[in-house]
Length: 486
Image 1 (tube, rainbow, N blue to C red):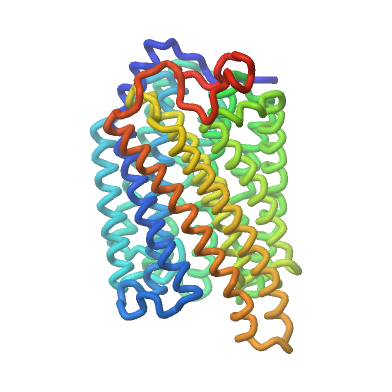
Image 2: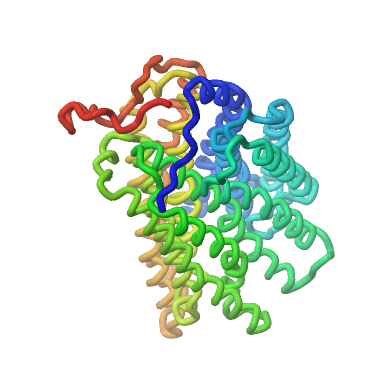
């Protein structure tokens, strides 16, 4: 069974896009600011790994403050804000309804920015909680829960007002994450930021939450985007609607159990860790179904990757989702975890999920959505090329270098005959490669930010033809361009 996204008449599409314009451009523009700021913090963090004396005389810029500030600006600033922007647009398009609560969602974006800025300043000033992925102090972290609930209610209202009874698979994922994550976030905030839990209970809550930030917040948004934009760009329905539903429900059932596999060897009851391992291994089901569905949809259309910026970023992200999920499931196996835990391997794995999967999908989504909001095309194909190759090559170098270094590091740490200082010295060249990779990604981010700034100022050409990597007429003998503004 193949099902395509609902077709919306051009005039109705224009009306829907115009209702989204100011709200989504604010979410998108804010996310790009946090992307640049987070990239700067990432470079400082990376340099400190191999050159500890770098900016060491300034307390605000010590590693223990810059690293969590980077992490939170990228998760709550860049990733969440870009994801919410795409989510709202997809809800409006797929429900065939104008964006609801425009003024409220606009104010929510401003409110969100203020909280992320205040929380980041607090971390840099030394007021971090020290709990990974929840370093914002309670007075900044708590109010963010309100914004998550606003997004949920707006999504529910558009779903209730939809003009088509059938729910396309993207809506399943999007509404699922808006329903799951506000409660997950609020529950984790209460357990971590208050005396409601202590000791190892906080540790278990930490990894339950941290794993679900990716699994039940960013992953559904990313997969919803992939399920929408691949068929939209190539003009073909998704391969199997039944496969897509199987992937959705197995993700919903198994992913939320998987976080505790990060605590193998920790002071927890054996059954708690075992449940996490089983949940992680069961993730092979949704990952396999999603991978088959995406691949079979693309069969016969891989040539479009040569021209379409949206498709190239989206497919890169979709392939990375398969890779990071398989890697995560294998990492839950005890024998392998004993090697990779507490090494650079874990850092590479986290970036493969949040960056290679979600961030690349977010880039591709914005390349499709923004021209429809500002009614002009991207001003420079060369900037898009710099963006793609800078981020793709940089991320690949980052992941390969730290993955290899992490395995070697883990094997050496398990050998009592190898001095720890020798292990540290061995990893230094790979940490330099990490900084080079981060520099390449930052160059790509700057190119993207320039393009976004020019789009917001409407410097692109007003055209019915999209900005492509290469002219399709040269590649395919005057075949119709694969991506058309609709």
